[in-house]
Length: 470
Image (cartoon, rainbow, N blue to C red; front, side, top):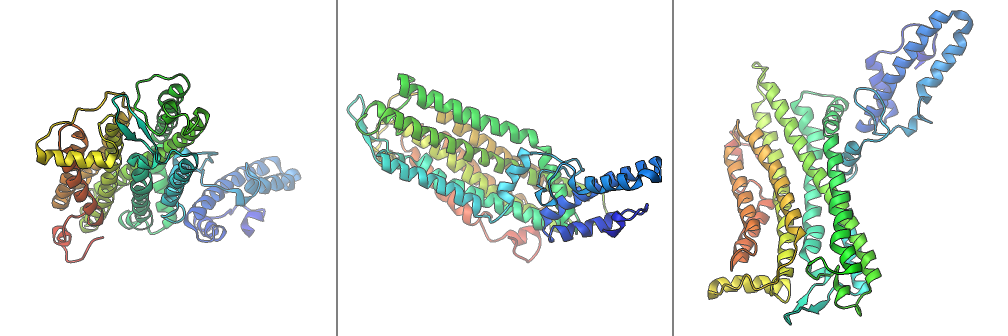
């Protein structure tokens, strides 16, 4: 620091800037990276000011030096403590980065923070539905069937937001922390955590347009426009040919809940839903970025024939693909229950449990009454299909990039078979009598895959070593 305040041309070296950043950042990787970027920029500004001082002569030396020192620590910030993560790894400061802010939801703090927040949100909506009386409500359809449409009976809200989405966020966070703190630094031979974090943030910035696109789609189309078209307009004006559910129960049972109360509750529910699903797609983008980063590092090994990192690459690739497989299974399960709920509303079942059990028994009794329901517009079928396609794309990309070479063929074939079974079960929902039997089998296999994504205990031998790989 003394060199900065002296009237000399020495300045401060890059190595000393790095050590100074560690001191100011208290050895925290993120804070150290931010300080290093700002200190390097300050060094450049001070060097430019000293050139001006030489040209101006000694008469204005002190004034220019004071200006340089002020600019060093007070350029565009009120104090060094106000430094944020919104900095570009190449130097210029950014005021806001949606990509980095979104990545921070997964990488900052405890891995339980995001899953717990999602669980807390749906719990609050569940309590609110109980207070206003739509948690357990039925209505009589035009054909005389008394149908259960309570909020707590809808698996696309209870199971998805209470179980599958929190698990999805947990596994994404766990894999991201592994890749940033251990996997990437080890494979890329970057002993300095700061350099590894900067390289990773550059990968995050490279997908900034993808984050923005996902945000716009989820907030405007999946959230605002869908709420207006599916809930608000039918509640205010009627029509739309949508099935009656907890969001439109005020139309047929106004004594249970009023239209204004339903508008407020559905607005809160759709806002929560679109934000959570934006984070879901952020998780998929991060999974893609991890796979791409690992593949690029492995591709670089081919240019170094004297360096053999194949074993380390295989182990990291298996760890990454196990995490991607878990997230893919959860993503397809989320879509399955979205489609199941939508199909149930148009079916002839009194409640969703009785409908599934009755369909399962119909296969053994020889009945074929799968098409006894009404025909409604089902936007959830379309949105669930998008989730399946997006989720399976990430898994397919990882399988191609990491499984073409190396010794990951056998584990990936098992994982691919489970994913394919889930996708087939999704596509055949309500397509034939007894579809729920196939759905139950695939769900059990998928749940087993969450606990043992390798689907067997021979992973070590498949990788060619005698150590267990986690």
